[in-house]
Length: 512
Ligand code: MSP
Image (tube, rainbow, N blue to C red):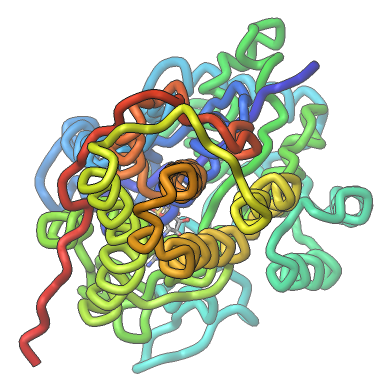
């Protein structure tokens, strides 16, 4: 039985240090990777950096650095960020690595051999910032300069010999592919954008440039550099040791289950990428999810706009798990979202400190005072206990389908609801009034601890460090974080001793 799951982030341009937008794509992908692992899947989670092209060449030149030296430095800051964000990625690919160059050249050779690529001349507009070609209709004049309506970035006129990929030929096969794979593009709103773009007519795509040097040379004509998007997209295959199609990695993980990307790069992933793959006779990925942007004010964060939010600063002040939780809960998945100090502090206080942290502290302190942190052997669930515990077994399949449909919003709503349920259960049962009924007292403590354990498992993909801390209450470790175990109402060892833990999230005192 195939039990493999391949998830990717976009590979980031190392033209400047990482910002919150990059952190967002990676944390989202990490959520899915961690969930699927705890569900028992063999997960391969890939991230990395996209190092070729004019954008990087110019950024290096500005800093008077050799492009590779420049990429080495900035790519390292992205790699370091994977540690800072506690990402569980299995690999970090750089497009300047030989394994990737080999794979990109191979794709090119196949496309050329199959007659999918021809030599001609490109004359049109190009945005170096987006590394994208735009038609006249996709541009507008703002403050006297021609900019893309999609991204707002400026374009320049390019006129040079270029190889073209026969994208126009793939218009109908792509439409057929979308209709046979209804969930290839999510969310649905984005899918409609892509469909109307493809239906409006696809033009052949320029896939090589001659006017700069920083990239992978076209194998059959060294005067040309491969278009950076054809180069970059191939990274998803390179990391699986493509072109060795008999390789275990390739056989286990291709086609990818999920490419997590930002909505700005949907066209490349949902149109060009499957077209290249169909033309090369390689299966397209199963799904592309285009998430929204993290806005700063009401604008997308970018180096050129100078409105960058640094994830490291936020982590320094509030801690990593608070940031991960905020991005997953407060940014409605699929839509744009904002991050502000006030909203972040409210979220830490209400959800993490009050709702979750307090629940854990209350139950453990109560057990400390009344049963000396001992878990009794003698537990008898009544109907009320059974009812709260069964929320998990009853919703087991539903939770999996939330994850498999990338419905993070419903997932987190379920978690928050269960935190309320657990707090309410403990209040309503009033264990402090049951001191003369030890059986009942022990059962309430046990049920409350089971509720904490279960919700902590669901929180693990979101706040892994905190979840691991909480599992220590029950002497459980990472290996015990198994999704299936939420169905078990008597997982915590009886006749055992639980442990106290420190404060999970400090409440932020507001001065106003
Ligand atoms: N190098 C390309 C991707 C190639 S994938 C084969 C690229 N790099 S990028 O560094 O500009 O952006 C990478 C990802 O970060 C994109 O998915 C983009 O949407 C995301 N973010 C960049 N800024 C963002 C926000 N402000 N908010 C959320 N994500 C955004 O594109």
